[in-house]
Image (cartoon, rainbow over all chains, first blue to last red; front, side):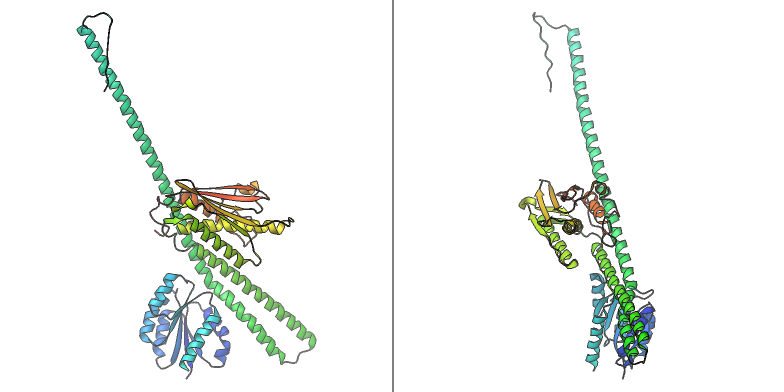
Length: 129
Length: 333
């Protein structure tokens, strides 16, 4: 069964960037990625993915409407088994505290360090293997 | 109580008229004395009122200034965060493009091409990669600037509290020194510390004063390094001296460098916002103007500069011991 990573960010270029950065993994079918441009779309996708092996959710925080921090507890309620990593430009202590308190596994800051992100993803894949 | 005594040489009683005259005079004198006393007390009261009005105005000025600094901090933080989003794309798209060009080269490796065309393609690929490396490098530079801005604008200016002035100056020296060493390879400067054990504690906003000291110290490093780079004197040793001194109800901090000094025409504009002599990208021109506001308007102290071009620059800060007490809270309030 293929592994799925869900990326939530309101900026459409995020999809292009992630598809290019992880092009080899995607080509080789190591995992697949899906993109949601808002928190409600992401929640819908998580509900639909009940049978799929969703291994990781990466979410932006600052989004119009429902923010990433609002999405976090809702996503955890739907899938307590799936780790959520927040990705944000706001790397201050307060944001970090809120994210971790609400069940996020980690908080990465923008500009994204894809080296670190790749390590995080590899850890999840090894865990499921 | 006063006594009015009248005497005369030959012995005979004062007439009623005379007594009446003298007692009227005594009454008048008493009224006059009372008037002087009243006048004095009114004058003292006026002086007192004028002083408390002055104090109030100063306190109000400082509060306004603290608010201004706080909103400037919030604005900077907001802008810095907004810049991080596009910067994320700039840095990461350029980094991935460098890899993609390698892949393009690999893909073309298996294709039969005449040598002239291959050379041309390789040259273009090299140039493209060189350009992308530059984009990556400058993107990282922009990211470092943004990080710095955020560091400077940490939400508000915190709380004021009694702070050991020698420890604060020492900590700022270390911070600035290690920062400069991390930033510039081969950076070195001799540090001289002369701390007055009686300097003691000052009630101040530690974050803000640290910001001022970091500014002055890194300016000093810059001036000394510049002189080292420009000079022919083989025995020139870049030096930065920090000194503290207790002045009773005030404390003095001196930051002195033996760098290039400040020419008179620059000295006049030293504390103006956005005035800088540093090359583009190296200074915002806000350091000294913000430092001035923090010392003078927020803490009610003074900052002066003494300099001789080609020899030295010395900043002298004087802070009242209860520097921050006019402000009940920091910028965030």
